[in-house]
Length: 329
Image 1 (cartoon, rainbow, N blue to C red):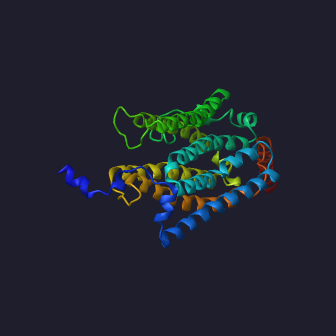
Image 2 (tube, rainbow, N blue to C red; image 1 turned 90 degrees about the vertical axis):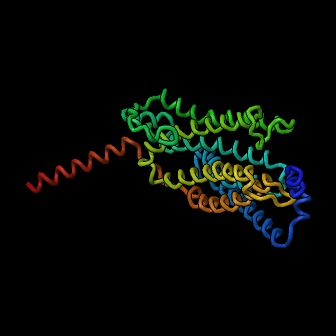
Image 3 (tube, helix red, strand yellow; image 1 turned 30 degrees about the vertical axis):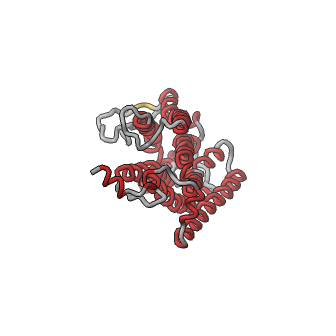
């Protein structure tokens, strides 16, 4: 029975991802036009990002300009790495991990951006030192409505930053370790045995991801009402969308490929074809998000009013209303 099954499977379906030259030789007219179009999208995304970096560098103050460059670069960097992975299937492991390491830094930078938009760490603490923050937010504790609100302090802010920063550091370290093990043949995403390294490293990275997203969500849920004038909500939505597309979508496609749901198409095995489809979809999606980022980040916003100015305006309005009431009386 097994011999009959093996005789019906194309040998290419059991091989490693093909070389770039083998992929080019197998392309027909439609596939070649598709590859050219996706490559053009990736190049345009990268060029738009470089032009946007020049604009941010000229018009934004330091250190916010550095943070904005990191965050706005998530989509074009992922699109560029996906383009490399599409043309060179054997390099998908390296291109994916490069994109994931970059986005791990972006997670931390999103938290830093919200603090910098409110004047930096010291101004942030002065503004919210008398307020309590809700911590029952996703992805960890969105269902825990009984969690008490906590007072914002320098210590709490330090732990929130540390929770986001640990993912950027440990993700990079584990990615380098995975690449080293992969070159030695010890890291294989299709190896789901308990003795395999992938079955231990990937779930651990998933836990680190959830831990890092929680501090960012806590800060956003408590300060977004103060930052609506700089379009924080759509910026945060784009960041969340990139997270879902680059992490969840890729994981689902890889699972379908490992399960055999995505059929083999020589010279691509099921897993290699799943990776190819993931790279192609990612290029199109990141191209669209890059265009949206141009509208959100390639512009200057009015400075946020300080808390003291806000209180003075509020007191002036109260005094004016009081005077009007007395005049009417």
